[in-house]
Amino acid sequence: MRTASQDDVCEIPCVHPEAVARVRAALPDTGGVEDATALLKVIADPTRFRILTALNVEELCVCDLAAVVGISESAVSHQLRLLRAHRLVTFRKEGRIAYYRLLDQHINGLIDSAVDHVRE
Image (tube, helix red, strand yellow):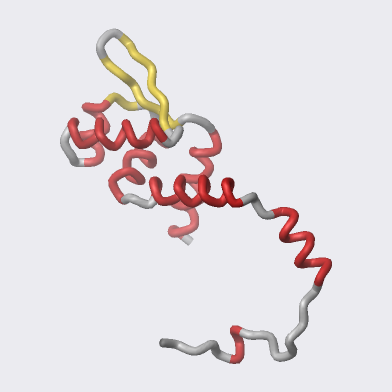
């Protein structure tokens, strides 16, 4: 097990109560933390992230998503059900075809930020 280096710890033990209070006040409650980490776990799957990234470009049907991501339509449908359950994607029907898109701009921003971060 790695021990903390001198750079990882304060040289003088002290607490800045005002800073601690400000940060604690800004943190989400326990339920918010649980929900946010559950969301990130869903996005962290490579297949689901590829689907979300594709939908960040444009709305696609299940067949198109399967072609883009390189998995079966059945596997895409399974992943889309999970993404819908976590309120990441939505769809509209046009005849017998369902077109999927990201639910809102928050999800677009999250995907954009993740991709931008790894490109830097």
